[in-house]
Length: 173
Image 1 (cartoon, one colour):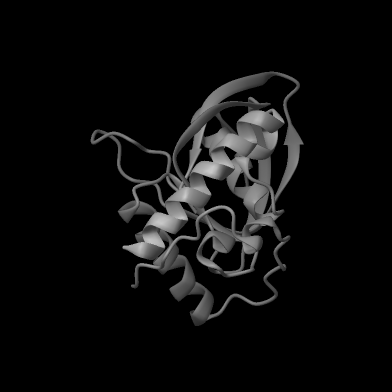
Image 2 (spheres, rainbow, N blue to C red; image 1 turned 90 degrees about the vertical axis):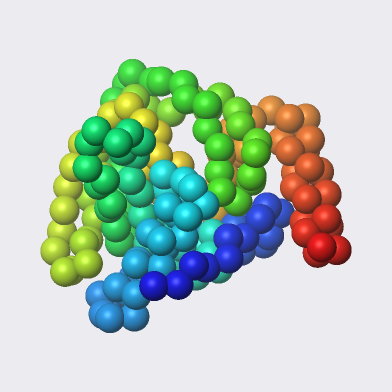
């Protein structure tokens, strides 16, 4: 497994719609393992392939954040939301591609998602709470959308300027 560099906003790849995966093979399994390792190392609870410059509909997540429950790493290939609740919830979201920036985002409180697993089998699950927020956030990445796109323009511009400054500082380092 290899840690992959995470793209920082603004990067044009983060605004592109990703391509569907047509075949589950060993290369895809390596990608998924690298994505999980990169996500855990960051540390984060979700990561979408475009965040590491891979323009495929693949995401990983694990919203278990305590030492009591076992980790639940999930790999979702070609995920799609098939149902969402009328009830909404607000979570303070962050993003590995927008480090140290957080904002409240309102999303459906529950969603049902269909995806393909690493064996090529179709899976369906209903998510709520943090899991629902995370899966929607990562699917947004696959569609070229960032959590800051839900914010008012002034706040979004402020965060974008901070990220441009961070990228300049990292380039100099």
